[in-house]
Image 1 (cartoon, rainbow, N blue to C red):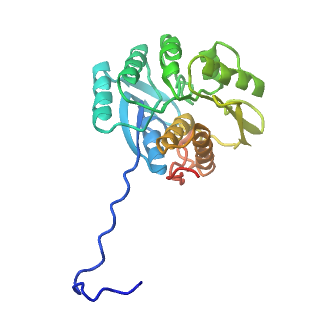
Image 2: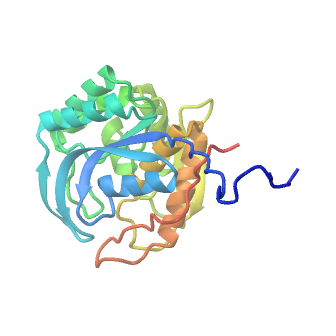
Image 3: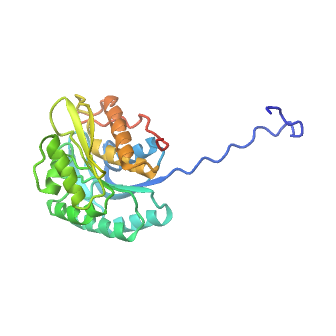
Length: 288
């Protein structure tokens, strides 16, 4: 044990390293953020931090920075459909997330793809309005998202305004968040995480429903303007955890921890709502 072989030639050198294990694949279906803090860019950075190989389907190209969204160009439907088919056929994802879908036609196209293709562990981030206040989903698409996509997802991640739109009910306080999360599960979602970042107080409360009983996550509120792309990053982190085989509650807990540290160490870029620090380490192996 531990002895060198005298039969090996002197020039042989070290044995070749074992091939690295193949990372799980995750797919993001979202818009491009030219400012780099949200959308496709944030999702791919987050996948990388979690040790997941990221693929993408681009739904829209936005001209935006930390201050505002200046323009939106929606990708043609046939191109979106072809992107989805190309990825699913050759790089089948272990988990999928969607963010900005922009129009009712795109929502319909994604719903068709979810039924026809093997796209497991679908995390639906119902992006409706940007942090800057600019609308990212047509109003006529909101009901279609609720009726067609929601029943296909493993987990939906609305903030308080989005939860109110999807359920048709005002969401107030922790009890209201629990009712909204449970209602989203009744509407067909496999699980629902209602996020409390838009609420007030010194504590942020997030509610996860879908298991035997609701799970409440609590953390201190961070006083910062660096919140651009928070929802995108969180849903991408959850999808990455599901791609690794984590249970939904563990995937959500890991994702919330990652986002918290990314906010705490945000680089302070831009004059508006700045981006997070996606360079913080994320877990790359399933939790015990």
